[in-house]
Image (cartoon, rainbow, N blue to C red; front, side):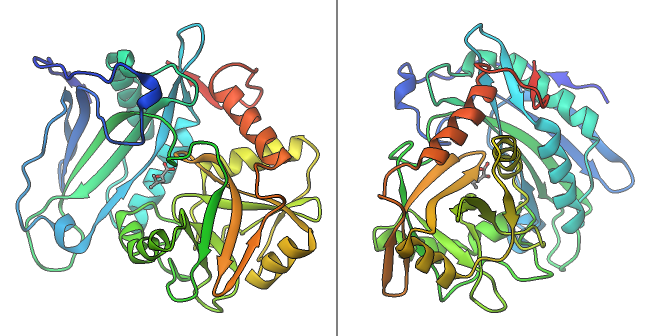
Length: 354
Ligand code: COI
């Protein structure tokens, strides 16, 4: 399929000061769009000016949330080169999400080509200040206008781009996390490992309650026993426990994070043993108090590696280590970002230059 390139007649005004960039509030001039019709497949691929869509009020996505998305980043290297980080991992996960929600897959090679072409055209928008990048948001929505609950016969798939700074307002600072004993994020057999909007919508009430109490994020426990740590709202979570890295296993209820996978690999190469196992909330809190839990950090495309300083569960609050950024957390953050920003070699071939 060819990609039609449409001209941009009214370029947007850019934020001059890159240090003021926040997460996901500014979008570039162009977006990639393609449409799907049952019996015809994907068609009308184009890179067009960024603009609102016109949707039928009965479009299935607006009623039954048949929607998936991805998040990946492009980085500006010091020599001006542009690098994507593990884009095929995201594209493959996009298709796994599509399959779970009965949506049509995209052609992976074509999608990567479209992504690269869009970024090439928008390359001026990629910031270069420390900690900034171009966040890429591929999305697919069901557009058929019908109120019966069924998979749509029509879809829109698009990619938008946003120059971003740090995900958390405080930047690379330890976050305070609230462990929810009331709400759950996902259950076995559900859509926990799917990157779909519905998962995030269902997390909002707990997140709002956490924010009202002064916490940055919610840590979810498993749905069956309400006992084992799963993941945080916008990131996977890892613990440095008894000198090993412990993180929840991929059993379908948590997101199979690209950053999680990368960090586990880097930590293995640093000589750390990885334990993908269930960790109970009691083990976690007791570990923080006894010192067996030395560090905790989240991993995610938006959050990168995010130190966790404090955990609260019911009426118990524990500080992790001295509440500051842990040594390993910083080391892993630096190892990952050095590869992403091209400061260190990339022996894993994670970086795809444009
Ligand atoms: C990401 O890390 O890319 C995410 O999608 C998390 C969040 C911003 C929804």
